[in-house]
Image (cartoon, rainbow, N blue to C red; front, side, top):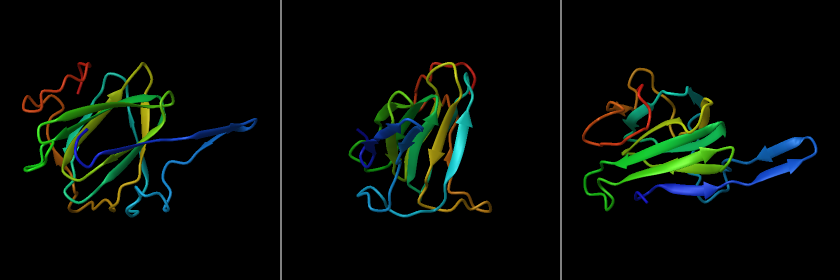
Amino acid sequence: MIDGVKVKDLSVIPDDRGYLMEMLRSDDPEFQRFGQVYMTVVYPGVVKAWHYHKKQTDHFVCVAGMAKVALHDAREGSPTQGETNTFVIGWQHQRLLIIPPGVYHGFTPAGPEPASIINVPTELYDRDEPDEFRRPFDDPEIGYDWGVSNG
């Protein structure tokens, strides 16, 4: 596992009306701070990758479909520098994936349906100076095979 990455299995609490799933609570040991909440959707055959943040920690939960989320540690001096992890999250395996600053990440659907991810980042998005640093989805230095043809 990449240093600083955390995974928390989530409990789905069903009843006769539907279900409830807590994703992140302010009293969780994993909780750091709240910046904002947003949802991002990726369509089948598409990859949203690669980028990292210098300040922000991301908290991903896939709330619709299934997502293949890949992480790559390019941090200088990290004990896991050069490692890549893959997680499949979503309705079949509900998990909170915590991605620390400096770790490249991206995702694509793991199946024929779009994947919807809710993110609770620790920082507000700064439209004038975004805390996002990008590489192409097929960057040969990372060398990750997304299993799709359109990036």
